[in-house]
Length: 247
Ligand SMILES: [Zn+2]
Image 1 (tube, rainbow, N blue to C red):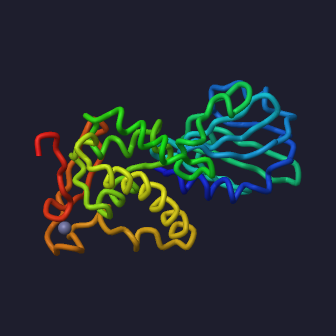
Image 2 (tube, helix red, strand yellow; image 1 turned 60 degrees about the vertical axis):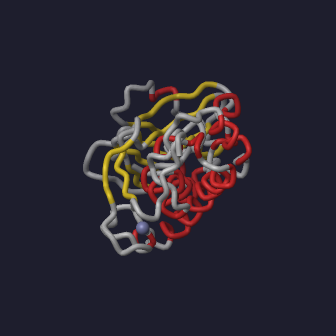
């Protein structure tokens, strides 16, 4: 699943489309695509895993889900969910994704402060939201898009390993300094992810995700589908401490 940094890369790759007129729209999306035709692209934005194409008084929201992808100025063989054919013979094509309209100003819909990639990211607000959810497990908290929009499973596994926190730790049992580190590392690692992904060296820098052996302890990682989110976790029982309410 594309995580927040990958959406930032898409936004950067598509930046030339800002100001262009959408001349023709195709695709098997259920939305009323005729509405899009003739509009100029006002801006491209991202919020977490959402790619937002801002038009005049409404926007198109693309969510790439688990297997969605895109092509810029080229096409895949499979039919596009949404194809925006613009001036200068350029086109933006999206596949296997969810497409929706968002009415009105995007600022009324999105809390940019909860997006780990945003200039408006607010770590104090994230800490406050976490403190209000003491029962929540660390592995679920990081995937909560209302707190850490853009964080996906890779970032979750890497952050927990880096800060030495067991995925089944309760948020309420984390010492204040550890909670602060968790919030800070979620953003810090997301930007490292962005730089590594751009340089095509992301996987090389994985320490825990999809790995077999803990590089700190040289023992096998545990792997299991944990928490309410039931997503794959890779973790070391020795160097990642489990913070529990009764410990
Ligand atoms: Zn270890």
